[in-house]
Length: 266
Image 1 (spheres, rainbow, N blue to C red):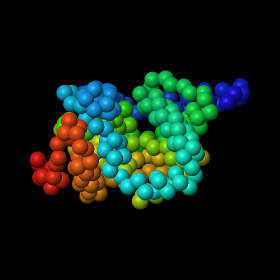
Image 2 (cartoon, rainbow, N blue to C red):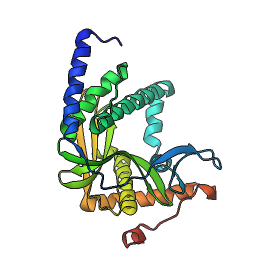
Image 3 (cartoon, helix red, strand yellow):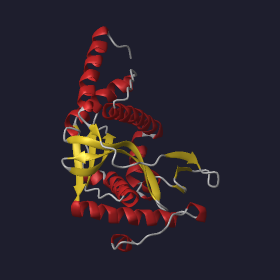
Image 4 (cartoon, rainbow, N blue to C red):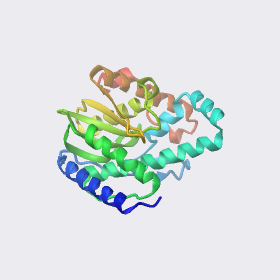
């Protein structure tokens, strides 16, 4: 995709505007975040997170292995395997670019993507910055690797103060608007990040916010807090135990946990 002189001028104007907005979000370094990396486990051949002294399955691996696949199978049968793969790859690439733009806006580290998908992702990120991040006055970390020792690990997009509450934020691109009943795994993902953050850093994450934008710039926001967040944590722990039941190799298993024990301080 070739950009005209006007496109380039408009692009730089938008980047300048977003950079100014991002500078209003201050970094609060109250949490000394650990670093981790994804590796191929030499014992199992699977991708895992290596963090602290642990090799742990990712949040998305656990949720992907334990979700109902019937809808996905029906969709693939309807559109065909090739088209399904094309849509998946395009969505993934556009989502990756959108995340990188958002990380750039928050941290002030430059990023550019002049590909066709990058040109789609940029205004999507702008929409999230303008609407979703408007209530954020400070952030604690961007693209933070979190882990729950012995259970799982993953990377959350943003940990911040959102409307006065310590919050875990997840950015999502979507090809069409979402309904709450379609995004159970989004809620479970953010609940797992909140549990990990609280356990390792002694925090009390009060809220999870999922910020979604489509290529035609339709923005949606889904929140969970209080009793709702607690309920998602219960469901997440059940999915973790379900994952363990599916794993035959003892080396891959994490520590089973009774949800009631967890919430009673285990």
